[in-house]
Length: 401
Picture 1 (cartoon, rainbow, N blue to C red):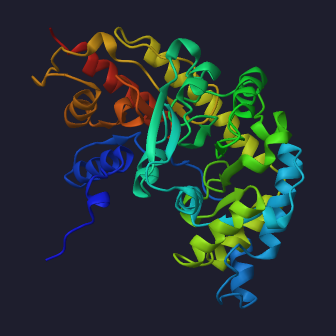
Picture 2 (cartoon, rainbow, N blue to C red):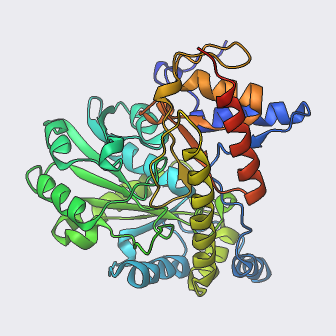
């Protein structure tokens, strides 16, 4: 009889996936579910990407690809770093993965030993601590308070560092809060890192193009080029290019680390689908006007959602500065009862009751290490967002003491 490993048995299903699965179940039963649980753009992939994939088929490029990635894609990625980030990187600093999640997996597998610590500012994307634990790592959470704009404080990072610290994870623009880091934040963090030369930095910049109010993404590598041999940048095609299903992630970092990550990938998935790589080359070479159009749409939807949430008595909602999530607070509503009689003991119970009674799927903030909150994706149509906010308002109005 099969028995999972002890390490795997302790890992929960990511809450984002679990809530989306429950929403699909209810929808299959005929319930009018609106799911705002997954972070998936509601735009089609660029026409250039489709044409690029077809061109790969016509050219017969359907054999095993190089494990680090095909040279045209690596060159296009290097060009993207020059164009978008002002960074000059060599091809041996790059590799292509099956999505950004595999890049994280590769990096942690290549570097973590049992007991090594990974500092993860909370709220965090659910996979960072889960993947670290898969390889014997110990996630060390530091709270990013709402009153600080959900940005990590340099002193909190300093206090969390120990001789066992292996990584600091930075994900900005942030999932789930939409927070970004300004130059002052990055300079303060860099100063702390200079005091701890044994600490690597994983900078997940997958939402770099989705910033609002005229802000532009700034990488730690821009601010602290002297730390280049310790910074791993994670990126990919999923968010800004609406290419989630293509599964193309990118890692850029010091050559020894990238070589170790290539070794991991060579013994797991090997190279990435040639058709997806060809489509990604074409998308990266396109004018980014399409990306800007998506960003403008998300910014408008942000206003729609945040305004609606702030009108609901009992909710708080910080203004997200990037990505496509709102992260309303529920403190004033915890401990009360829903109209259906369910005790809202925490944000998990709140999210479950909201789904079962109002048919709106969200993700509880405690899954991201910081509650009581909800994460709502505004990568959905205006009509869905307006209706979801109406249902949420009605659900809250029905809450009793």
